[in-house]
Length: 546
Image (cartoon, rainbow, N blue to C red; front, top):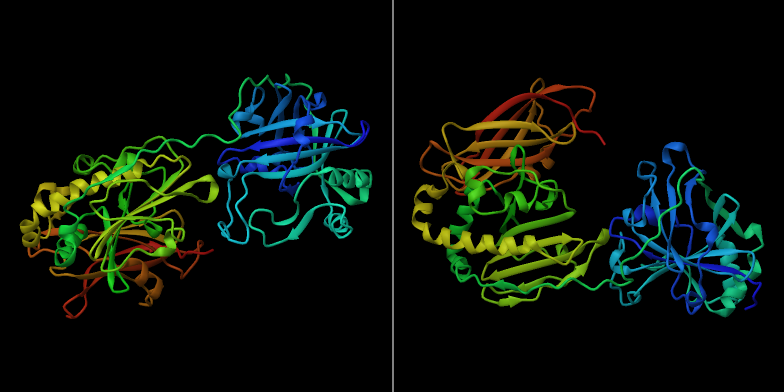
């Protein structure tokens, strides 16, 4: 390498879990597996100290880069107009910038810590591709006065360098971490090869253009940044001590299943010879079924999971939004679905396991996933949790809930079998009066939350039928039947009504034309008796369209 050769700038990327917009700015870069020793000679390129406005896009889509000094380098971040001036890298992740001058050309290099990635491939964990400890990119750039240009290497030029054995690299469209062209190492001969084509404009194309914003005060000095590889948060063991869990395995499982069917918080349905009970999500309108039983902000466990006081008092206040997702489920007479659990990542224990160390694995969008499965006999309970931190508050709350639900169900077993519910919980579990039905619009036209209070008087499955009032045609029969099946509570007292809820889509029609439809809740007895309608309601609807 000569003193007048190529200039390299090395960017270490420490993007936060939702900093994917920052990554998108530099997608024109070339992935690198190892930077070698290039970082050690880096200094700060003073020409970059500024705010830069992207000018090769429409004004409504423009964004800004902020290069803020930090020690002998920069911290750079992507910001937006409403953040100016004074925006710093902590707003959209942190990128450390250094430069090595070896000539008239400039190259950028990025370094991303894998546990902060906003996206992970489905091929994660493949034996053919060991998981990397860092993610690196290389990209040419140029500062000409008040203009910053980012370039992308043409694929044909890279392939020629590889074919001539001038660089150590690979072209692999199937690689889960380095899709397409990538360099194995930025060693001396690779540097010399890139220097040889740096002045060939036909081998590079402009990827993004920025203009220096001279009317704004320069970015402030950054005094401290997070470490390259942050220490994992300590996680205390989970205490699994549920002596009453085994009581409800075997024949007694029907007692627990009946209690769950009576609780509005749970949706119970049959599947493949067994029963699944998924916890509903509390909304401003009450308990609602969700896709796959997943609960996410703005409603979550902090406002709805505490048992039983908030259920009894009807509290479900909003709380500060946090990016997480959870799913609680009971499984009767069949084991949990394995494809939900990231292959073999589930932590499976017995109800008296004591202290348990939870297995936590990397998921998509920067989240960490865990799945605690507790099982005995023919009953299982699973808690799946996705968060950006290792802490698992919803898993602990689920264990606390079990520790209260199981002994309460056991203590009131006689009353439960006699009346169909536990009277201690009153209106939070059942209502008294006549059957009723409520048809609510969901988040799009043609999608509905149907709620009802019914009492079939015996065990069986409730489900929906929807008809066009004018023609009598049954609407979306297969999809509605599949999505609306539920084992509801039942009692010999006809005045007692149990909660029913389903989330359905009507595909007939569009968003422009309304028509009247009749919604009917039907019941199919487990004993084999004739099916019968429990309640119906009519309203005007739209059909759903993609």
